Amino acid sequence: MATPRPRVKVPKTASAGDVITIKTLISHEMESGQRKDKDGKVIPREIINKFTCEFNGTKVFECELEPAVSANPYFEFSAKVPESGTFKFIWVDDNGSTYTDEQKITVK
Image 1 (cartoon, rainbow, N blue to C red):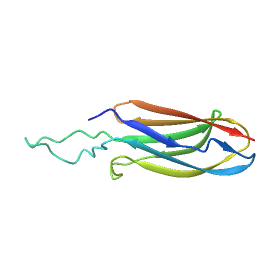
Image 2: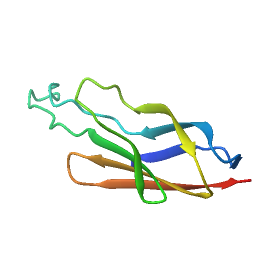
Image 3: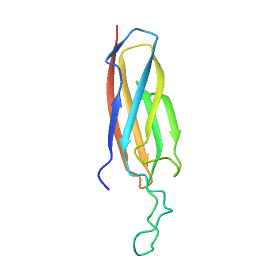
Image 4: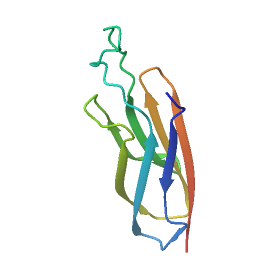
């Protein structure tokens, strides 16, 4: 499997109190653990099982994923921005690997 690569889209600027739309996608094969390889052996489960978004250290969105989620999970959600700061995005998979991205936003 190729190294998972997160992609995030956050507006660069907003007005205080605006509700913005955030879009995220991570390239990940999301192996369910239910398929078999050519020799009939079960391919071990390896999925992104948790996604979290924080703004200036405060959690604004979190979800847990199950094997039925497709490859390359995409999330779109809204957040209210009271001040300038940094969004931190964290994806965790079954083997404990963590993938992160950070995006800054300026409130005018």
